[in-house]
Length: 226
Image (cartoon, rainbow, N blue to C red; front, side, top):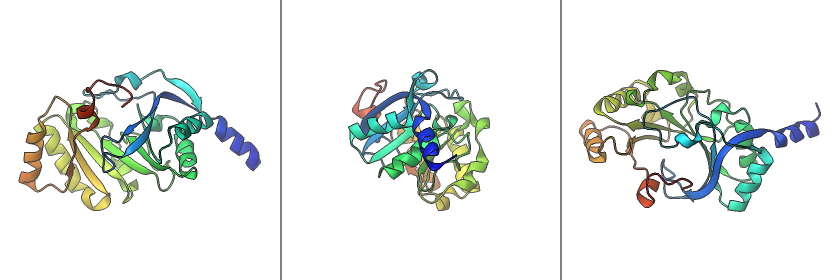
């Protein structure tokens, strides 16, 4: 196959898209910055506290070129691919690379249940390790940890003391604080008081950063497209 044919094929590759919108980044070390979100549709996990259940199925097919055009219209250098689970879709690495080539900083938020090494060099992976109360802890692909880069981030969503102790054990066992840019702890909205999680972290001198989902304090928590 010639280079021209390969480029044409890439442009015509499609992803199922739940929504594309511009807002502020609500989580991670990028919190507070303007960001375009490309939310893919489809997820193979069923976390108890999921706040984007509407993206588990369905979606609208869009080609890589159509997605790039919509991102251009929204005019923002920071772009996050999220879901659903973006790594369920074969064209996600292609889209990530094309966004990089267009000059964007690309974040990919993933459960880490699928291999993360398929993503291009320089993409910032935000891997959401699932704690026990999520109901999906057994689905964690822990071998992904060895593929994490210094620019990446690891997130734990806590709903209980049990979740906190599990996260604390993973941070220590895998030396995550020395491996990635940030280890992030947040609480499942309405299931655990933030002050309680912060107290545990302070008591243990945990090498992690606490975060709140900023968008849920700016807009009503059930609001889509923010």
